[in-house]
Image (cartoon, rainbow, N blue to C red; front, side):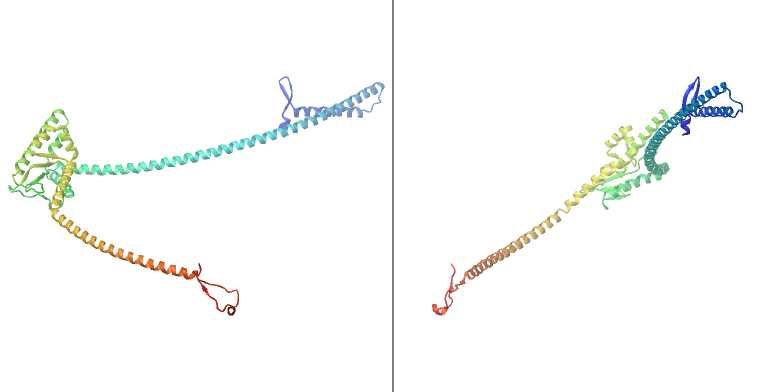
Length: 399
């Protein structure tokens, strides 16, 4: 209602007259007129003709004013009704606007809640994946730390000549022990010339043994890898060639004994990276070693060679056990023959039992037929007394 009183009613110049101001002005005007009439009526003078005329005019004016007041009241009532209608319309619109705003806020809150839930779930998944990756990174960091420790230990091992030889010997022994059966190899065996190779392998059908050497010159290779300048690297490469070829010559001179060892020996390199670099950058050294009947192998190639030797030993054992296998096959054939005889006898028993069952079925069939004939017999019922017929009931064969 108060909001309706502030609605502009008309404009006078630049000023807007509101409905409340207009009502206040009308009420003030009416009060002034009533005050003027009261003053006139209370004056104690004797009215003259002019005064009577004036009074009549005043009465007429009062009547006009009363009518005007009535019109104003009616207009005020109409204006009040309009204001109430406008207030109702404004209230309805305000309610609709509030309801629409509430619905929009509820929808926005629901969508915002869903968005926050989805975002929280995505954040949780991202954090879970991040934790998993951090766990993997931690594990990798631990692995790297362990590898660094192992590399440092390996470097310390390779820095010492004795431990370096023990390192290669240990790797070679592990590969041989994993691949060959006991008794087919010997570590640190003594040859007829007093030399003691790192390992000898006994091949089947051969008196000579195969020699495996694990004393690769790792010191020269370490110097080659640590070389910085071109000249230093060339000098280290030349030293590496010289040391490897010297070791090849030593193997041939020490371990090649006619009739006792094979004319082929294996030089074991305990590192795949060294073996790869040797084949990549020092192919001439590898070829010279081959011409001297020395095969340079890394851990993988030694495993493959041991597997080939294992297959050869297995085939030799199979050939050695061939006569035993032949005897077992003969015994198995004899057992099969006896089994066949027993099966034939069992078949004969089953045949006799079948014939007996057929005879039993024939007898059973005859018994059934005789029973059927007995069931077909019936007594004839006489129509007169037996004394009149001269005989009693008589048994008739049906059919």
